[in-house]
Amino acid sequence: MAKAKIKRLYLIPILSKALDVIELFERDHAPLTLEDVYQQTNISKTSVYRILKTLVHRGYLAQNQNGQYRLVSRPRRLHFGFAVQSGDLPFSVALTQSVNAAAAAAGVELLILDNRFDPDVAVRNAEEFVAKRVDLVLEFQVEEAVAPRVAYIFKKADIPLVAIDVPHPNATYFGVDNFEVGYEAGTLLAQHALRCWQGKADRVLGVGFSEAGSFVQSRISGAFDGIRERMPGLSAAQFVQIDGRGMREASRVAMLDYLRGATPGDHTLVAAATDSSALGVLDAIRDAGNEDNFAIAGQDCIPDVLDEMKKSGSAIIGSISHGVESYGPRLIQLGIAILRGYTVPPYNYVHHRAVTADAVKGRPDAMEISPAQVDANEPAAERVE
Image (tube, rainbow, N blue to C red; front, top):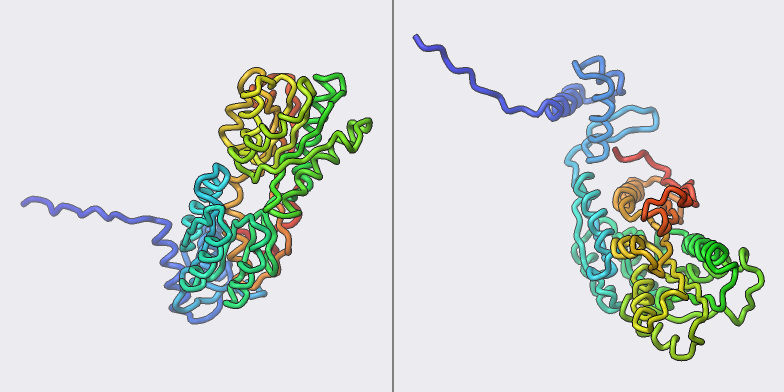
C-alpha cells in the first residue's frame, strides 16, 4: 500500500508567532507585560519584544505607562499625505523614494501629490489632502509667501502638518539647520581659497532662493559668515548675491547676467543654495570659458554634483549632504509620534556633512569632514523598528 504523501505547510514562522501573541491577548482579555507574554508562549524574549513593538506600531496593541500592553480593537491603517516640491528636481525625487519606502515599511498608506514648484498647485493639493481626509501631511513646499495659506487649510481641518526644509505656521519643522549648512559650505570655500589661491578672493557670490524666504536664504548668509571668519580681509563690497530660484536653468541665466558686469579673471567663491543652482552656475562659467577662476559649493549632494566632483579641474569643490536617504524613516516616525500624542520638538534637525571633491575622488590625503551637527532633537517617542 502506497504511503500517504505528507502535505508541505507553507508557513512564515515569525508571522505565526505574532498571531500566537495576538491570540494570547484575545484569550486573556487583560493587559500583559513583556514578561507575561514571554512566560506564556514558546517564543524568545527578543522576538516577543519586537513583535510587541511592531503590533503597537501597527495599532493592534497599545502600551500604557506601566509597560503593560493591551489589545486595541479594529486597528486602522494610518493615512499620510505627502506633497512633493517638484517631481523634476533630483533632491525631491530622492526624498520621495525615501519617504515612499519608509511608509511601506511602517504600514502607513501614503497619498503623494506633486506641488510642481507652483504655489497655486500647492494650495490645490492641500485642499485635496483635506478632501481625502488624510491623518497628517508632510509638506515640501518652498514658496514662503503661500506657506501661511497652505498651513491654514490644514489647521482649519485639524490635520497635523510637518513642514520640510521651509517652516510653515503652526507646523512641526523637519529638515536642515539652513544657516549651519550654509556656514559649512562657506568653510569649504574659504579653505579652498586659503589652500589654492594664497588666501585671496576677489568676489564672494551667493546664489540664493528668495522665494523660499529668509530661512533658506540663511544658507547664503551662513556661507558668507563662514568665509568672513576665515578671510577677515574681505570687504562688504566683495560679497554679492544673485537669485537662482534653486533651479539649474534659472541659475545659469542669472549667472550669465552677472558675468556681463564682472571683471574677467576675478577669483570668485560661489555659495549656492542648492546643487541644482551650483550646476547652473557651472554651466554659465563653462560657456564663458572661465572655470579656472571659480570655486563652487552647493547643498544636497545630488548624483550629478557627485559625478561632477570626480572630474579633474571641476569648479565644484564640495557640497553639503543633507542625508536625504534618512528623511523618509524619520519623517514617518515623526508623523506617527505626533498622531500618538507624544511631545515632539518644534524643530527637528537632520544630520548633515560636508563632502569635498578630494573625498569623492578617494584621495588618501583628503580631509575627512564628519557630521557638523549631532541631532539632539529626536522626537520624544519610541523609535519605530
